Image (cartoon, rainbow, N blue to C red; front, side, top):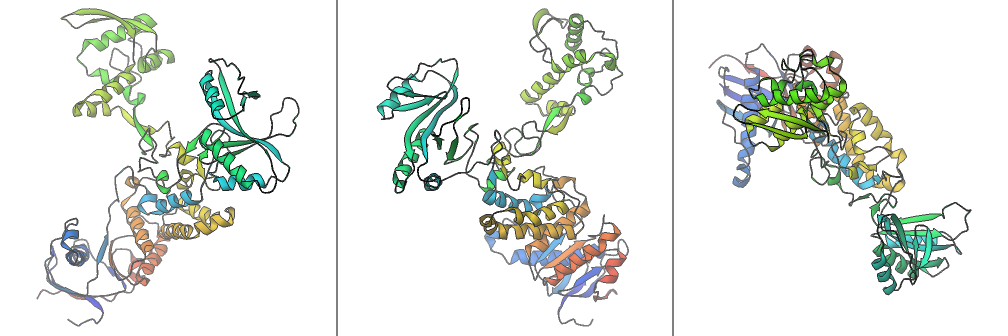
Length: 575
């Protein structure tokens, strides 16, 4: 066999159906291995070359690191020279984990979390206006910028829309040296505070200072702001002293030391990347734990055959029951609400169907139960078939019972987050009117265009922060677009992808990693691609090669075979 100066040399490969094969495969090239089914393509590429490259790499690590990695078996081969650390990209789905999405697998979502944490602006769900955290010095600068001679009361909004008399609070404020308060729109002296109705909601602002802006008063302003922020949990209000028309409210300027809405009190913690992760308790929707959906009893599965009557077993979970209690329950309901047990389900009124499935609410029903051993009567509301199944599923410790009831469940969008996966605080943060979930719902092609034009909508300061992050996002989206996946959305679950889609996602991720000197082994990456997308895929493989890697592809596609540089020479005769 001739020797190739810069090649992977395989001598005596006998793995599976290989018959003592010798082959030279050029390094730093794109090489296609093709042939009939069963000819040994995968045995040579995956079970011999990749397996030995991976095994040698793992063996080169420390004993401590090796304990966390699976050491592959040595393939049946005499010798392989010129190997690099190997990465396999096979025909299989990435992950069935419901928490794994296209965005998380490709790491695009990780950079998006960083982007929203650094340049995102929180918006109040009550007013729709942006809410920003400010330092005391920024508040002073903003107040001084109002202009000399501007007059306003600096207020601390201590109580907002809460019931009570607040006599103790008024006395405490007087002891601390405050003189006036504004209660429900009217100013009062604390020495003679108003008597409040404890059954009504009240708004109480403490007058911290009366300000007339003039040069050199920054220190006084800073101290007053500190006092106001301490009284009102990080909120201060400047109410201008200008005269207003009757019936109008005075003009007010709100300052916040936290991300808090002064109207609704809506607050968010410090904005950091984990706030936007649905795989982190800090950011996940508390109702669905970040899954975006919940398993609920599905009425369509509870009553699958609507032409059946209740007496014929229309309610599927009760149809197989040998217990007479459920029949007696239906008879009691039929007696009270005057409906027939022999009428088909779809002929019953909407009201009757609803009370059978969802219960009678507070309306009580007279039940008579007789199990053959004892008879008893009880008057109580009926919880409904759906409520009964949900309660039993929640309370049971039996795996069999959970599996049995699970047959009548289906996934429905979480009612709290509407399928967005994140808690409300994360969904209040926006960039160019988009939440992070909004952008994840875009197709990869649309997302690439959106992030391309995003810098035009950002401020100079935001662009300075975001420039490196946006580059990483755009590059990864371009890689996904190049391998023919522009129709996928970043929020799509990785478990719903085909084998070809999963392989191309891993391929795009490897290009994004920028590694060189690596041996990549791929298994028919063109599977599932339309013919028009093959050229784009081949260009992607060549780009991976041009980074300084060796790419071995097991492939049947004629275009791939013809357009790649194939120079592997083999001696297929047994020694």
